[in-house]
Length: 249
Image 1 (cartoon, rainbow, N blue to C red):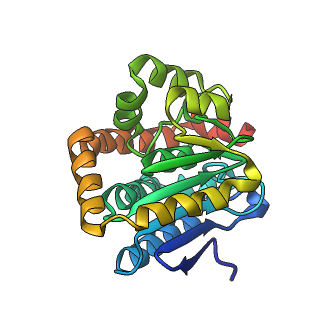
Image 2 (spheres, rainbow, N blue to C red):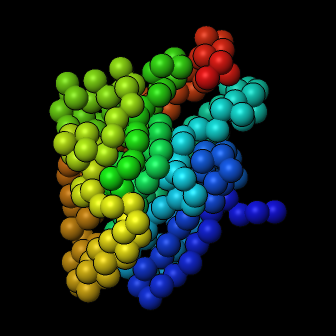
């Protein structure tokens, strides 16, 4: 079986690559579970200081694989388990004692965009396209972004991005603060490596403590926001209207 997530280490840096290029790395249960397992494995590696999350092929990740919608909505329990699996990856990224860098190119959509927002640094290729499609389908966002993004960009911009669901370019991501830095796509992974090695030179405990203190202080309502998201997302997935819209898409 082909792995949906490929991990490798390069000195103090762990590379986690989303590996479903034939589906633009869309999120199915295999990918979500393998990413969670890879994050747990890397977290246990004392020698690893920084994690780089990136995608194979033409996209970072195109969000939920809608071909799996029937399996995700076969019952309320199945939907609950699916959404909780996605949310668990958010908690792993946010609570990790290591710095997590998102190296984003191509399409970055829905749940993938939410995972990118969870990361500590977000490098966007200048060709990146991104949007939140969930509300268009009658679904709901995950990744704690109702709390995280609102605090980062303000409630007006957060509502614009999530309710209107319009497609945006990389410059817009930098303008609103979703992207930390824009780079040429050909240099994306090299720039991510340089940043990771720079961070790895800092004292490990100090970097880890700063990340933890900032996340706990700035995102104090993250868990509560995610609980509300999970409830609303499960309801959305099970909505006949949302299922019809997603299948039509």
